[in-house]
Amino acid sequence: RGPSGPSERPCGPEMSARSVAVVGAGWAGLAAAVQATRDGHAVTLIEMAPAPGGRARGVAVDGHQLDNGQHILIGAYTETLALMRAVGADPDALLLRRPLAIRYPDGSGLTLPPGPPMLAFALGVLGAAGWGWRERLALLRAAGGWLAAGFRADAATTVAQLCARLPARLRDNLLAPLCVAALNTPAEAASAQVFLRVLHDALFAGRGSADLLLPRASLSALLPEPAWAWLQARGTTLRAGVRATDLARDGSRWRLDGEAFDAVILAASVRESARLAQPHAPAWATQAAGFAYEPIVTVYLQADARLPLPMMALREGPQAPAQFAFDLGALGLGPGVFAFVVSGARAWVARGLPATAEAVLAQAHTALGTAFAPARVLHVAAEKRATFACTPGLARPAAAIAPGLWAAGDYTEGPYPATLEGAVRS
Figure 1 (cartoon, rainbow, N blue to C red):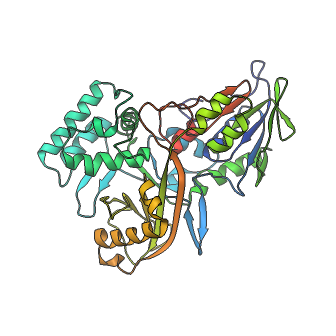
Figure 2 (cartoon, rainbow, N blue to C red):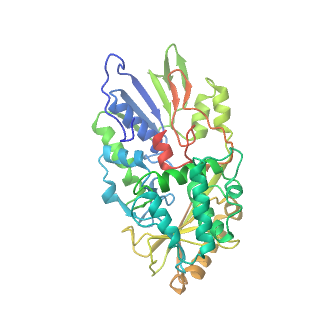
Figure 3 (spheres, one colour):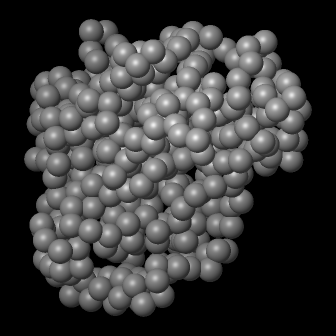
């Protein structure tokens, strides 16, 4: 597949049609099933849950269409956007595109203007509200150093070490929130190398690559539902609510729960994929099952309020869990509904979800004003194994497991952290 997205490669003498099983209909499994179908293979897609989407799907709560966690996309998600278009989902209609803005309720923060990436970054930094010239010049010097080094860092370096010499205001109000949003790993434990790759591809890869793409519809409407319908229309065998239980080698083929396939793609959760692969590739399965994970908690509040921007940054603290707030009413997803996102939420999960929700209520009132004083908790979504901990030197398992047996998922070997784009590219 090239940069334009899933390719049309009709089967020829060099690529005969195969029967392919894809286990798991999250974003990685859907991408794999669509690509295999476009390549002319006979695909069977098996999903344990009642509906596709995995960790990025819509959920209905008390008459509200919410998500199992707030997600955003960025302009650099070229493969995800191409896949959406390929299955008939229109990114221009489903996503609100805005310039990257890390803005706080007091008006301070960074906004990138439109234009060529490097010029836009420089102008955004020079015009950042609430920063002194010391902070502005320090960030420009640091970015110049990262550029000169090819956006590479020693594999053992953390983001906190990478940014240690920068002014505290930059670390606390820009780089730490960007790090936890992109890697879902606190800066003290996050890989500087992966963080720099994300910064390069988002901020400097091309015009619009840093733009925020905020969902105007449920996550299910962005890809899972259109991809499922696209596959169904092309004769793909779709099985929802079915757990794959047994994978066995059968000569040069595979048997999945007794059914023969030429190839199998494991795109389920890491645990499920490792369980199925264990008898055939124990070293791969052990590596895949050995990850540490970071949770994400999304607290949905209802209040008679509006935010100045659809997405705003919040200052995290010992009693302030959330790093970002989203005005879902401004996105057409329900007036008066707000999503507060707590990334790298291990400590808050340990305190308990009720305590986290109460702390978010207090944080909303303190940071965003009296309009949130009568706010109520609508729903708390917790993904306790939301992403792998993206730590320095982390060795991730390869996509190839055994002949005819592959893995797809945001955890497999690749340059990106656990993101929607990483899942689709895998």
